[in-house]
Structures are given as C-alpha cells and as structure tokens.
Image 1 (cartoon, rainbow, N blue to C red):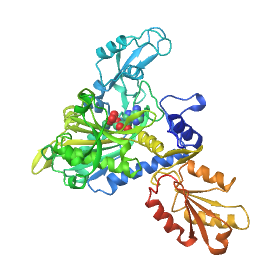
Image 2: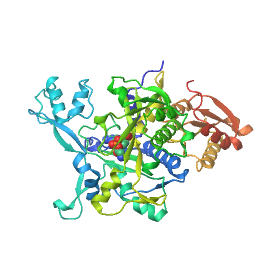
Image 3: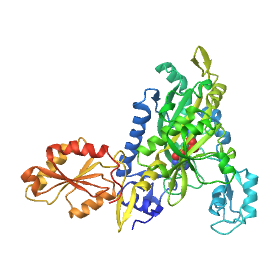
Image 4: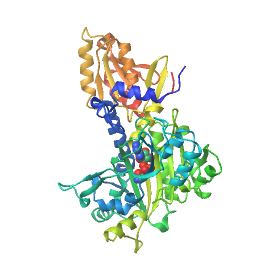
Length: 502
Ligand code: GAP
C-alpha cells in the first residue's frame, strides 16, 4: 500500500540525500534560509534551464535579462513596495514573541484574506487567540515592511539605505527602455529574468514554501492596452482544459475548482482578456510538461481584498500538497501600466513605445513562478513509498542524475567494461558510477534520488555486448546492445512519463 506523502517525508528525503540543507546548520540553523545540496543544485539548474528554454530560447518574442539584486532605492518607492509591501505583526504582551497576525488566525482554523488591522484585531479578540508560546495576551497588529534593507558604501546615513529586491519584476520595468532601444523590441513582446528575491517573512515555514531568500522566474509581457484581445497564439490554447475557482465563486462560499476550457473562460468574462488567458494556459502547459498532474493544479482568482496594489486581476496557480492543501506556486497578474507609469513619474523618463504610429504605455501580463515552491511540488508529486521503499518519480527534465552505471560485480573485467561505458556516456548525460554494496542497494538509492534509468553491466555483456537498462518507475528491465544504448536511453528519457505504478 502506498501511503500519503507527508511534509516530514519530503524534508527527510531532502536532508538525507543532499537536496537541501538548513543554512547555517553548524550554528544552529537560520530560519527562512536553506542551502541547496549537490542534488538540489542540479535540480534547480535544470528547472531554470527548462523554463528559460520554454519561455525564452524557443519563442523569439521574449528577451532574457539578469538584473542586480541591490537596486536603486527609488525603484521601490516608485513600485509602491516602500509604502505597501507589508504584513501585520502581533507581539505578545507577556513574552514579547512576534507572530504574523493572519497566520495565527489561519492556525486556529479561521479563513483570512488580506484583512485590515482592525479586522485582524477583532478576530483575534473574538476568538480569544493568545500567544502560542506562553498563553499571554497579544497586542494590536502593527504594519511590518517585508523588504530587507542594507547600506551601500561606508556611510550609514538615511540616504545610503538600499533594498534587496523583494521581486525580480521591477528590474524588468527599469530596463524596459534599454531593451526596447538595444534590441529593437516591438509590441507585443516580453522580458524575462530569473534570480534571487528577498522577503523578511515574519514566520517562514513549511520547509521551502515560505523562505526569506528564494528565487523567482518572472516574465513581464508587454501589450498595447487596446490589443489585449489580439493574441495571435490564442487558437493554440483555446481548447486547453484547466481547473478554475473564480473570485465570484469564492465569495459565494465555493471552494472546489471546476473544470473549464480556456476559450469558455474568456467568452464568459472570467479571465479579463485573451493575453491573460494565454499566459495562464502556457504556464500550466509547462508545469504539466514537468510532470505535475492536471488534477493537482488549479487556477484560483484573487478576491478583491487580496489583490496586490498593482494588479487589476490576478490568478494563482495552486498545487495540491497532500500535507498542506492547495498552495500558490505561481501568480499570473494583469499589472496594467501601473509600474511603467510609476517609474515615469519617479524618474522623469519617458517609458513609451510606438505601436501603430502611436505612443503607448503598454499593459503587462506577468507570469511569476517561484523556483523553490515548484521544486517542492515536483518532489511531492514524484514521491512514492511502497513497502518502505521510496521512489522519486520525477521527470528526467529535472532529475539530478539522468543515468547511473553499475557493474553487477567488481570482477572478471565487468567493472572495467562498466567504467568504459560510464566514461563514454557521462559527457552526454549527467550520470554517476556506483560499485559499492549490493546491486539491490544501489538500485534502491538510485530510485530514491530519482535516477530515471540505471545501466547494468554483467557477465553477458562481455560475451554478447549487451547491457541492462532498468526503468525507475516501472522496474522494467530491457536488454540492449552497448552500441544502441545511447539511442535507447535518449528515446526512453524523452518519452517520460512511462506507465505509472509497477
Ligand atoms: N512579481 C510578482 C510577485 O512577486 P508574488 O505572488 O509575491 O508575486 C511570485 O510571488 C511567486 O514567488 C509566488 O507564486 C511564489 O512561488 C514565490 N514566492 C513568493 N514569496 C515566497 C517566499 N517567501 N518563499 C518562497 N517562494 C515565494
């Protein structure tokens, strides 16, 4: 019997096998920060490369940039983050411990969506919520800005304060003009970048889910505001099916998503325009290609009180984590011309572009993906346990190793041949060689770290030049000639997912 995966299962596997380490562990850890171990570092690289390949390299209408982490301080005044990027904190009047007000209510089973401080305070009192640590009374909610600040240069004055970026998006807006001029970009087009973002989260939690340092992969796609329904790619996604939960449905108390066709959601006005719908569908297509199952993904519209200060309409792509329910892994917002106009106002620069002979400030659709949250979803989706044996059935696109090569035994020239094959294949696939312990243990380890294919060399290899390819997800073994092994591995890796279960 397979059991439901728990957060502990994921954390244990990640720590034990070197996917992630708590940062600063030798000093007792540092809340909200994780370091990538060797396997996690490979997964991260593959995930980002796959994203870049799908959304930048193979399209032609999206330019990639890579901006600075510490950004001109005016950026964050213009973007509204200095004023509005806040959460509410409550302090225990007895022990001084601090908590995020909405998290305390959520932990008590009370549903909250972006409440005012007065509403938070009322709910805390009405539900008699007290300090989880000492039972003391909680003070009134106070605003807390989530941006990390630092000082640039040797002088520590008010004017030397700068911020670590809380989202990568603003670098795209501040480079809008540069990209238009240097690349000759014309509407519609996008700018993409991935990279670190920093948020001083009041209560980081749930492993990689809420971190203080994390990575985003973001696209700002610029469209003439008059042409939000002129999407030349729309027919390619019109019939795409997804699960949707609209703002209206949530306001009526519905909390189950329903299946729908993208075309229908535009026709009925649920998604405000075709470009927004297109980017929702493209995002889901990519997430599904990575191996997240359609029925584990849903698109949830933000209700009015939840909308960020810059957004006209936002949809979150949520993944169904068995241990914490539906949680956001990507946000897709219509940011209108809010950011470009604010940067024009604060910098005095013209941020127009000419389209159809007219100067326009474009609207922006923003698909914003979180690297660690997607990695956590992929690890959760792939994790299976069968009679205490763990198999990580993750896509070969992101598997830390694509191949492992084993000699059945370390003698009679079998090991020499196995090493020879390993050296021939390791330049093509990220592979490792393992001759330690029993073959059964080596297979078990490979399954646990998600190696899709193991190649085993045995006595028969020396006689007839064949090897065994063993598939992780099905445990099937196929015998192939050494000279055709590379082609078969390629075929198998590119035809994943194989039959699920075994
Ligand atoms: N530029 C828009 C923006 O930053 P967001 O919804 O605040 O929007 C986008 O963040 C994505 O970044 C989220 O969907 C999530 O995947 C990731 N993210 C946000 N805060 C995070 C945190 N504290 N820890 C890990 N990932 C986070």
